[in-house]
Image (cartoon, rainbow, N blue to C red; front, top):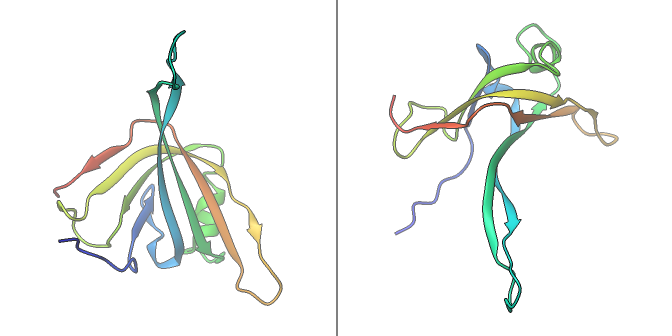
Length: 136
């Protein structure tokens, strides 16, 4: 039987800075290159998995206070940083794995639509292997 879960309390840390309280959306994107291994005479294309890749898309409420994400992230833009992500802001377990890696903060756009709360969405690209741990 499936165990549905409401996504309401993720954990995300950049370096030693816990930015969880400012997050509105977070996505861990896991991917693999798809390499064409088709040879003559094949009726269908044959795809082979290639190099793995990952990234994080994280939206934050705009906050330039010393505890907010904007100042913390601006200082690491274009550099590498350690990150940790857990779907639930609780201890790591089999049902709540921790994903950690070294990433590069690629973009930090700022903006929005008239009358909405100001947000920034950061794009972190993988720099090292993504590690998944299921115990603390």
